[in-house]
Image 1 (tube, rainbow, N blue to C red):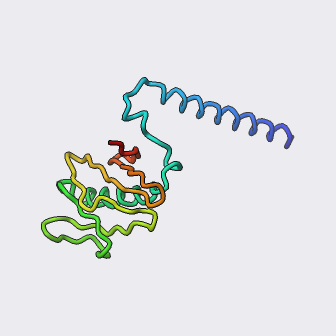
Image 2 (cartoon, rainbow, N blue to C red; image 1 turned 135 degrees about the vertical axis):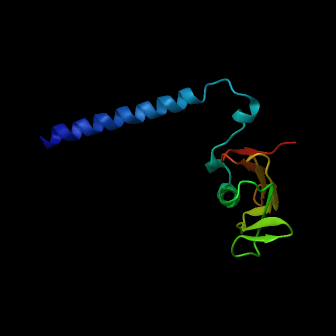
Image 3 (cartoon, rainbow, N blue to C red; image 1 turned 90 degrees about the vertical axis):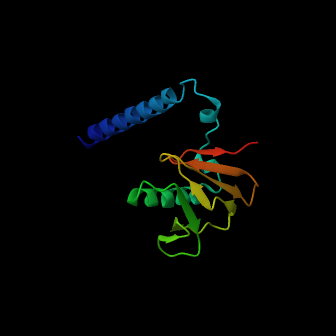
Length: 137
């Protein structure tokens, strides 16, 4: 009896994984534009965690007051505060980041934060939806 239920669980798991893989494969074949195809897996970006942390700080600021047009990210504050007519959110990048956007401009809830990797010199950006793309000139 145990063997039969283990077999059922194994088959169910295999079907679920196959379905998830199929949906992922179908979901990316929409003939999208170049911006979408330049998206990369966050595992390929050495500063992805830093970009996600910065994005979260901005989203937290907008959650409290969605009318902000700019949010500053700063390592010298411990809690959200207002300075110079801006909301300043605490953000301390890791040593992997050479440079990151200090003042994030927000347009209708849309924003982009850029960061440059110390190790590779590559500049990456993250948008309000968490999409990470490489900045190319």
